[in-house]
Structure formats: C-alpha cells, structure tokens
Image (cartoon, rainbow, N blue to C red; front, side, top):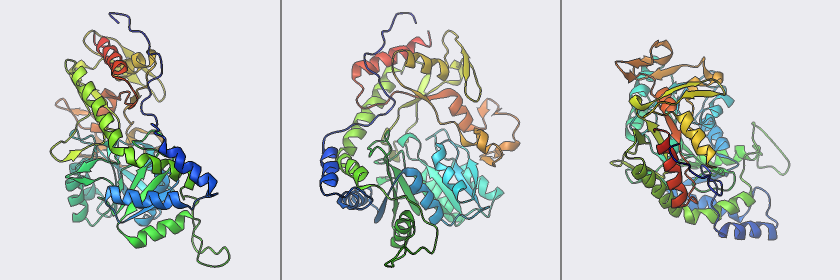
Length: 412
C-alpha cells in the first residue's frame, strides 16, 4: 500500500444480523406461554405477515430455506433420474434438494446483465433435453433475474418453476415481489439474510393444496388419526415458534434494512468509480433489488494473474491491475470480511460430471473459455473476476471509506 491504512477497531462482517428489540418480546412471549415447539402464535403471525408483504396466498414456515426448497422440489414432482434445470452460479442449497429427491441437476449458465440464469441458455437446454419439466431459478445477491423471459421459455415447454428467492426477499420485478413468480417459491431467514430468525425459511405458493401438502410433510407426514399414523415419508421441517418470534420482530424492519443496504451499494459505486471495476449489475428498468450484498467485478484488461486450486489461491501483483484474491486478502488484513463470488455449480467437484449448458450449447463440450475475447462460460468468468464486498448494514461510513481506500491501493 502507498500509505498505511490502520485496521478497523471492530470487525466489519459481510452481512450479520441486525436486531432491534421487538424480537426478544416475541421470543419471551413464546417462553412465557410455553409454546416452545413447532406450533404457536408466532408461526401463525409470521405466515400471515409474509403473505401480506410478498403478495402470495399461502406461506408455510419451515426450518430453513433449504428445507423449503426440498419440499418445493418434491411438490414439483421430481422423481429419481429426472433431469432438472438449475441456476449455475448460486449457493449449493439451491441445487442439493434436487439430488435429495434423486434428480439430476443440469446447470444453466449465467448472463452478464443480472448475473442470473440466462434465458437464451435455458432455451438451448430445452433443445438438448426436451423431457425436462422442472426449472429451479435463483435470484443472486438480491437482484431479480430476467423473469419474463425465463417464464416465457418455461411456459413454452410446459415446465414448472421453483423460485429460489432466499437472497431476494423484498426485491421486486416490474413492481411485483420475488417469491411469487414460480409455482413454488422459497425464502430464507438465515443469519446473514436481509431479515433473519437466526435460521428458518418459508415456502410460498398460491396453491392451497400445495401448502397443505408441505405443512403435512414438514411434520413427519402424520395422518389425521388419534394415534401416530404415517402413509408417506415425512420430515422434521417445521419452524420453531421461538425462531418465528425473531422473524416476527424483524419483518417490520425489512424496508429499513433494504434502504441501508442500498446506501452501502451506492457508496461503493461512487467510491470505486475511478477504478477499472464495475458493481454487480442492476436492471433498473424492470427491477429493484434488495441490495443484500454489494459485489464488484474487475475489468478484463485490469485482471492480474491469479491461480485458484480447490482450496488455495495464488496471485501476482501488477501495477494498475488486481485480482479478487488480492483484494480479499487486503480487506481481511484490516479486519473486514469479503467473500468470493459463488463458485458455479458446474465447477464444483461433486457436480463436475453433470450437464452444463451455455447459450452456445453444451458447455462441457467447449474447449475454449473465450471466443474472440468474449467468455463462453459466463459464470466461470464472473467467479474469476468478481468478489463480494463487506455489506453489513451496521458498517459506518468511515469504515466503508477505509475499505474503499484498501481496494484502491490494490491497483497502485
């Protein structure tokens, strides 16, 4: 660094829970009324409030976003051996539930405009695998994907959509909340999300039948008998009334959190404007994200040399250039937490034999990552050049300014 930048006095996290006080009131209520299990007023109220806020008819409060996705995949009818189209650049939780049901994920490449599933690649995938009837779509880092185009492709091929809105609660597309565009939709209240219960998730749907099935499955598929009778496999997936109390206290602060996250994004965008980098893209014409995480991507001609193995990475510093590895190391050195972009699923060791489709066709069959200087594997390109910046809404302006100065120093 050209000048010494002192470490921050307290840790700035990527995205940690922000509590307000109402949460403990509802947790205390659960304690005092002895409703400490998976039934109670908090669960009922949270389901009602999320339905009202998001604009869906039914909500089923569950133990996690992953359990919500699992039941959504099950509701979509995925059977052993079925191929399922899935977002490629996402967290593994988007994809694992397909495997739980014996399905085979087929990964659809990303596009640059929103960093989400590419509708052109999705159409190409249906040409290659016309038998597929389920598509799992995630909204990365709180930014909605190209929903109209994706829905049009799925409608053309009579495919069911499972919408993974775990990261995008409160984000809208053409004025409509994410979590309402699929046949079955999922949100998360994990500790790092825009609002949290420390854990927890929710399945959203307009189908009463689907909601009732999910609720039954989530309570071990117990039948309506005086004794414990089971006629199908169930799961212990229902949300705790205690966790629901935390979520209940968080819901009124959703818009406040989004505003804070938006301010962080805009400060980064302004502070980094003179560097050869860009912030994660937003389609303001059609959508308003929840700004869950602020991310950046280094321009191709400003990328330094970087080599990543399965668990380690090396880089070489060059004047005027940098790498995600260098920037993340420098951010960590001042007591702040950044992260790499989600490593695409088709690059993960466990899924390297699964099909992967780009807009140019079968991605596995391509020998070059670039054609005429343009990436053919978009997800891999964003992963190589991008990173997630500290985005905690308790971060002060002064702390963020320090982080920005550290990033600038990486290009000197």
